[in-house]
Length: 261
Image (cartoon, rainbow, N blue to C red):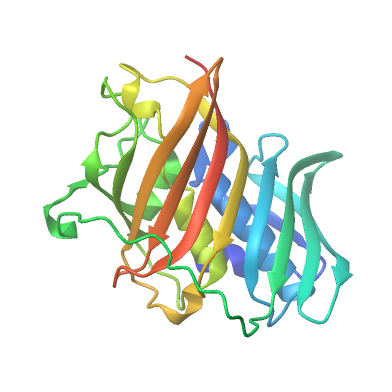
């Protein structure tokens, strides 16, 4: 199933069947889970509202198969709405997203967003290949190109990397949900330091929007750069910035992840 087909498969009551082919180990790709959650919330309780930030907890591995989504408004003011959406499989909550949406307001305060790094052109960058049995299944859905740093399990002396990301089959129109899926394609920032494959997964993820991604073309190759804050005792924290094809900052991402190595 394509990304658009997956989102369209969720019915008005929040019921859907998550597909095969988007896996990440024994779980579904977290970016797809986040995109499905936000898309349902946007369509059911937050139409026309602009996302400012969300915090997503991966409570349990989501698996291909039936899923039930539930969105609710926690508080709605003149400018800001706080809402929550959860996904259940059976009796288990597998993910929960707390969302803040807010209308633009006039302000005398203006601070420039991070400037895009100087990176080689996409056509000269290393494309991350899909290798059955080695790379996650979801990789075949995306165009990922390393511009700086090393790929996972390459035994690098340092973490961190930068590159470009896009869909192999772009959605009909760009959306916030589509950007959510793209941002989570990248692995935890310390995996380049490992010398061989080892499990790792996101524990929590926060994304903050600086601009509306829906105003960009669906086939945009977005720029991504991640920096590691620290990693010890099997847990790490990193922060990343995302720019559009013209180098304008659109989102900030922060993750806490687990590394089983």
